Image (cartoon, rainbow over all chains, first blue to last red; front, side, top):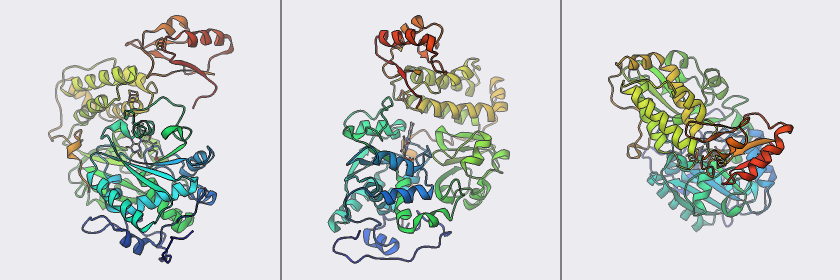
Length: 435
Length: 66
Ligand SMILES: Cc1cc2nc3c(=O)[nH]c(=O)nc-3n(C[C@H](O)[C@H](O)[C@H](O)COP(=O)(O)O)c2cc1C
Ligand code: SF4
Ligand code: SF4
């Protein structure tokens, strides 16, 4: 497989333990890396214009142990295989919605190394024999959208790819990033989830089998296809190999997007970020579907699902926020609970009514009005009752707050609050920024 | 076999809970809570009947849980 009309450009394989990998090309001035600059650094795209499905690429991804970076951590090789088995001409859909307000990692990739994302989409397409790849980008990620638009034009001009790219601007809503909602939207419907089955891998866009893969997942495919599974596995652990992008915010000196090897101790990541900017009470790990973990417990943890599981957490969307002692976890959680209730797609009774009731109860607790004895039961009752996992994620997040901030909750019920800081967890689109 | 409800279609009037009091409970807003366990053979006919009677065609009896 060669790039038509050009000599293949080879580059030396980077040292397997060198960091960063995905962010290696990022420029100091944060301008998007051009096609020429990208090829100089990474070498020729790992797939050219040859047709058909390439089973060997699927084998390579399976051997690497790469799992989805969109929050679900599903084995990518297995998903590629499932789509390829559905028949001819499937579609690739790159999920760049990044609905998670406290995550910027997909936007960093889109805006700064757009060709890595497109290379990866081309690899995914070649693996399953797709001729069409759609990149859906959240409406608020304007720099990312512009960079991908330019990058697609550069590639079309140079006839780099066999697959044809289409760019879609997706609504900036939390639930729009669910794969069934995104497929629904690309098909001309509302960006709301649909009942499953069928899953997109069986029947997606225009009824055709669709591979939905997160931006960071496909960026990994671009490197994996070039440097191979052994290289990929040199960082991370045997069960959870590779690197991941983490968006770290809150009470650290240098908040931002960090590329870490899986298994890095949380304590170490905080050191990378210049250390805490104030004494820390707790960490939110995994975004707004994530888990609050008390600082004392979190300090000993490795950033790895197998380790986080011991405290009921997971890496999820890999957004982490350090909450200072001077902030109140109940007040923070109540604000996000209301946001998540309002972000319900409004389709399923238990999600609409349940999350609204939960958010109202938390607001009452946060303002010291009263505690709601039915809150715990509502939390248990919303999980698994919607068409998508939005209520499950929200309930898990809120339940972890009631556990970790139990003392604070009791204090609130008695009419006082130990927090003195302003809001930490954002619920407004506008405040999002690219690191 | 597992009884499932499509919560997008379900209107929450609770007809299924009347037909299957031993399996389906309603939450405080009237939406049905499906049993966690597979439907036993002896209850299968009653469940099939309820699936047919749901005015929104929101119920289904599925071979395996996904
Ligand atoms: C409510 C909800 C929101 C989601 N938002 C996103 C998102 O913004 N970006 C994303 O990549 N995945 C999101 N997901 C996960 C996707 O459904 C899907 O699993 C993912 O895009 C698959 O890609 P991966 O296997 O590469 O991770 C969301 C899931 C749910 C339930
Ligand atoms: S569970 Fe909630 S967010 Fe998901 S589809 Fe139903 S109403 Fe929408
Ligand atoms: S009978 Fe159908 S529509 Fe009515 S509550 Fe039961 S599942 Fe919902």
